[in-house]
Structure formats: C-alpha cells, structure tokens
Image (tube, rainbow, N blue to C red; front, side, top):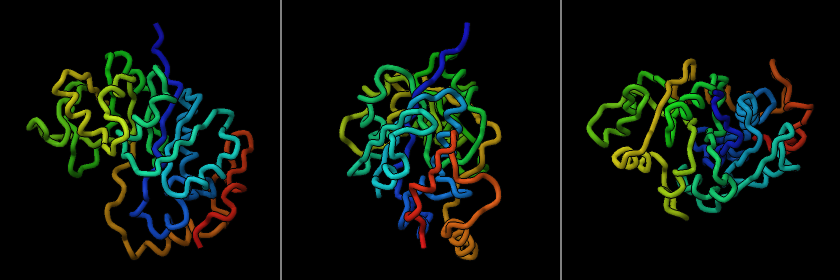
Length: 262
C-alpha cells in the first residue's frame, strides 16, 4: 500500500528579516536574490520535487513585491495564493489565517528563508505511517535544543514537562487539519506553545531528524563580513551557478529588476 502524498504547502514569507538588515530594508527576506534567483523560489523548487501542486504564501512587509514576482499567481505551473497579514500573526496565527484555502487535506509548512535540498519524503512517510497529527522536521545544531524526541515522538518542547530537549525545529513540518481547531482565530500566536499543550492532551506529535540539514541561522551580525554580504546580494551582477530563471524559463529577475538593495 502506497503512502498518501502531500500536494499543498504553506510557505512562511511574512517575517521582518531584521537580522539581515540592510539587505531587507528594500526587500522581504524571502525575496533576497541568491545567484540572481529569489530565495523563496529555491523553497518552491524543493517542494515541487516532492509533489506539491499548490502554494500559499503569507506576506507582511512590501507585499506588492511578492505580487510583482508572481504576476500570474503561479510558479512552474503550480498555483500560488498570496495572503497578506496587515498585522503579523506569527506561525500559529498564520496557519489559522489560511484555513479556508487549505481545506481538509494534510499540508506541509516550510519557511521561505530556508535554502536546503534535504530529502523530505521520509518526513511525509513518517507522518502518515504513524498516524500523527503533526510531524516536525528536526535538526541537530550542537546548541540549545528545545525539542525532546523519544522513539520518533515529541514528548516535550521548551522543557514544558521537565524533559530536556535534544533537537531543534528545522522550520519544516507536516500537519493534519486537526490543528485548526486548536488555534484561536485572529490572534498573534506561535504554534510552538499550541503543540506543547497538545502533547499533554494526547496529541500525536511526531518528529524526524532531517539528515544533512544546515545548522542554525546566525543570531548575531558579523560586521566584518557584513559588507561583503551586502556587496554579494546588493548588485545585479552575474554570479557563478544558477541563472535567475525558474523552471520553464520563468524570468523572476524581470519582476525584481528595480527591487535590489543599493
């Protein structure tokens, strides 16, 4: 019997990107170009590779730039729905805000500022085979760890129940729609405390360590390298590697021609 598939994704794109200023003064972080290709499109490519057919992307700052980048509300023949949050709702509130678009089928969430090609099929298989409500992608960072995992079951988050964590959340997760009834509507809330409460109420919260996922994003700005980073992303220069075209020749840089930091 084959494992069910996931065909819809909610990509988080509404963050402020404060740790990447001044790069994010004129662009939302998911739109910062990497090799002349907006960062978020690497996430979309990765998700298309596991069978995603439709995307929801939440926005906050400069939503018109997302609309300019996806003028036909599509990417590589997959539909995109942009949902702007005039007030930031965080991860839990963001999920609740798109409930009407996600319907009754399971979905995957993915941060729009991740750059990875880690294999996600195992996470999907784990979710369905164990009958989880939520399955978190996890990573080892060697730093402070918030998620306590035992036999692929999340038993504690942030030491809520006195169990020390051994992994960190990798900002990728698979969800059943049962999450919707646990998030209050119209409120700014992270899904982390909601999941922690769910553990005590019998929720099947699974976790899987994603091999090869890059460690944590830096917490402090390194001023010695900051100028070099700004130069790399701040000018429209030809960089080694991939050109700024998505699948089927979609030229994303045409949409962002006037959106680069100076």
